[in-house]
Length: 106
Image (cartoon, rainbow, N blue to C red; front, side):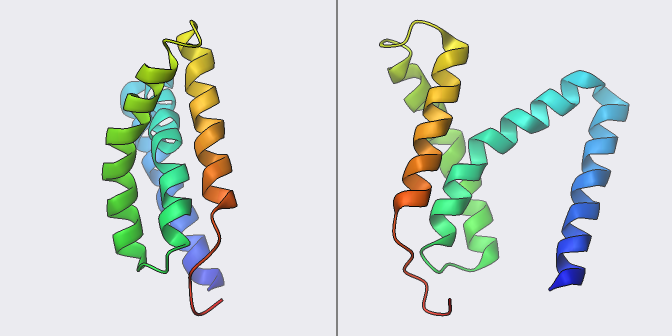
């Protein structure tokens, strides 16, 4: 398990370095935004006991669809786009942590 975490951290570090080398600071900002899109849904789907591949793929596609939709709707209430992004991210993280886990092997 420790080796798996180390390899995932190394892969993330290499991807971040490549994005920084090619795109500069904009590449790191892009990866941070993509991480904000996907993280709440990965946490949420992980609680349902899905395999890692299913969690990642479902999290990416759901995050790319629902996060911008929720930001667009909440932007009508909160008039600042940046504030709306952080509000939606916080709400999705709160929902992801509040949903009870349905995994069998915990």
